[in-house]
Image (cartoon, rainbow, N blue to C red):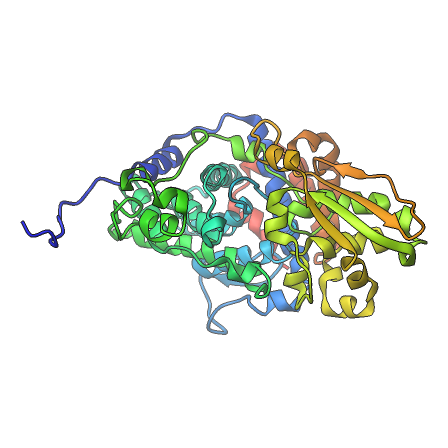
Length: 494
């Protein structure tokens, strides 16, 4: 046989795809902690989406692609009057919940926001429930949504534990598309072959570049990219349910597969290995670990690597409030991932640039004692030139221990420390915060803050009576889990 002839024998699905499918289809969620945390995650995520509706740059993206389109029994977008097909509804829900970068986060070799999958899960669950109700069948419940959330979190998070897509220039929203495609196909009643087909199609799509997340090209795409990804997952699920064939060797195929094309050719460690060894690494089996350990952003709408730095800055605010002009140097000690992702000098071009700048996110709470989404807007920035003056005085240093414990599965810290030096030779204490208030080890302290944040967010959009109905439902966990998804979504229509 000629050396340039391809062997056409169709392979079995890559084991990585089979493992995801078997987990999504067969795993029984028994962790009460995971269920409870998922409820808080749903609460916080939707609250962040409601808050985002106050920002025109977000809302301009919402609604049907063709104005006036009506979708009978379509999926609703919380906080709006839109009823859309599930693909566009997933896009819109994903867009609003990610716009302000204010809800849950997962940090590992790859980082991301597993709650982004809620866009696809909730849109499909609402659509399916209304379709079922229209023909006299039993609708899905919020328990079904919660289980799908736990599984989507797990797929995205476990893939991220030891596999760094950012190091090869790829955006983490790829994992949103993969996780959404898997859980939504199962939610729609897909069998094992259909789930695997959808997952394989998600990998074939490749991934967007991280260009829009980094200086000098950081921009608003990072606020809708996850909505785009979860929406695509829904589209691929729908196609697979209808019988679209999968691509079994999408990851491992020599030359044409994901490993060779996207993951190893620019990754020297993998590229030097034999082709058979170029594959993802896994720290653990799929279970409920990710939801149990998810990180909440409770105090600051800021990229998560900076959360503890913002807490330290708030602590230091009173010490520097009357001495801002005397500051000579601000030393920020952090971990390697923060330096690589959010340390920036020079001009910041837009709000999306500012909310991913460690120095900016420290300067604002140093000056004002707080940090809100409005603090990233152009008008605020122009009104307060001292922010950039403080940025110019900042020195960023890595603490190797911080970097190591960031990846340690038993610690998973996100440490930062700040110390400020003045022209007269004096200095503040070195304020170190290793775990943010949204960390698992601070759950007891964090949940009341999460609930208060949720209430504030709802009040930006809904009348008091409607706010109370939603809050009361979340307060009754057993009633919430039994609530039909379509009835739950009724509560969010403005």
